[in-house]
Length: 353
Picture 1 (cartoon, rainbow, N blue to C red):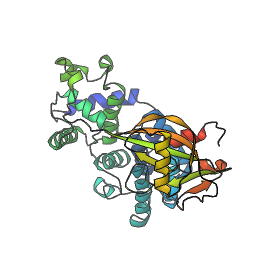
Picture 2 (picture 1 turned 90 degrees about the vertical axis):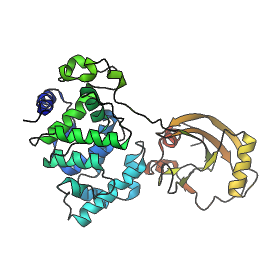
Picture 3 (picture 1 turned 135 degrees about the vertical axis):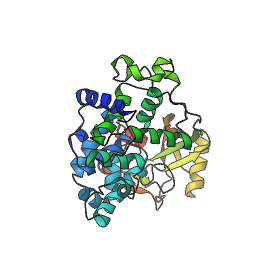
């Protein structure tokens, strides 16, 4: 018997009695398990459940997702962020249909060949759907292992990640590996939380080295600090009667492929005069009128801090719209995938909409 077999023997009974009843835990369908894992990389379970139901209703099978347009997928993903993952979902579905005859790959190595599927997602699908003893390692798993086994290796370094992966693989049983993986993640999500963990309710409390050594708040260890970039977005609500003017974001930046109001980006806040000058430079047309504005609000992304303001502006009489601008009747705006700040702005009551 493995020296670490106690770990899974303790966790699996606890999980069966205490786990949250989530829709993707009621199926062995690899498509739905994969879908849930990708969504939950972006958001909390409560919000993720809403998105999961939305996707399953729109695309019940991988064939349905493969047949969808990119715009349809982005529209459903709207608000989750990291929109490249939504595009990867669709691409991976196409791969399943074209390269695997519509059947999800049945092992971890083949799953890794799908667009956007990394080691974590491949292990989750392979273990839960197919019973392959492939260990998952995510933020919850790092935290549980670091605390229970008193591991000081930094989780944001390659050697540290390798060590955690090795330990996770050593811990996983041949029997029912899917339940084991879900149990470790569930423990991290509900008991061994980043702050104020519920140690008295933990099935591993008497084995936890961090608890014995009073080091819970110190683990897991990280060495790097993420550098956050500030950006200033000035969205132009162009006052055209009966229309909302949108443009599509290009590749190579956040929110790629989504629609937004025409945008002026600057290195700082702008006065009305400076905004007029920036619009004239961007469009080649002078004489724009600034009607009013909403003060900028901060929108946080993982590596960026966006200062977003909305300006109501009126073009000079007779000025044609730029070729890349798309006038949309307000009633149809909901059909387009929008960044969440733009969606919130356009969905509120306004005399200009």
